[in-house]
Length: 124
Image (cartoon, helix red, strand yellow):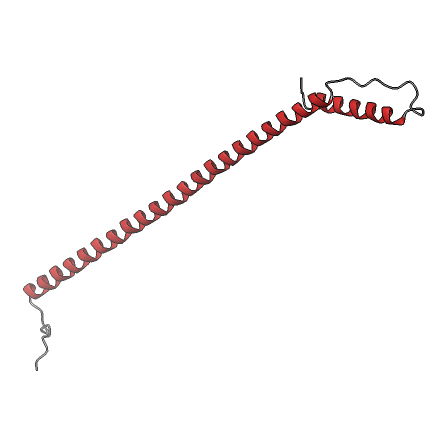
């Protein structure tokens, strides 16, 4: 079994054939190299797009949550204002002598506290 070997003294045609083979191999190698670079770029761009999408989706979710919280607070404020208006609808007069009738003094103090809260909540 004979192994094909290059002659000891290559001729110009052998040298040319070797150069063509090397050029073909290096050209295929370069094509493979650029294909790998392009594929890596595509993968990186896809990952960046996915991360960007997740960030935007999270930001939208946070905005929706903040909007729901604001609506709940506004609703609670309206309920508090309604309660404060109801509790202060009938004015309570300060008793002349608190020692004689302490329950009227306590009612008056609650009325004053509710009026103060009503002003703090900007309830009209």
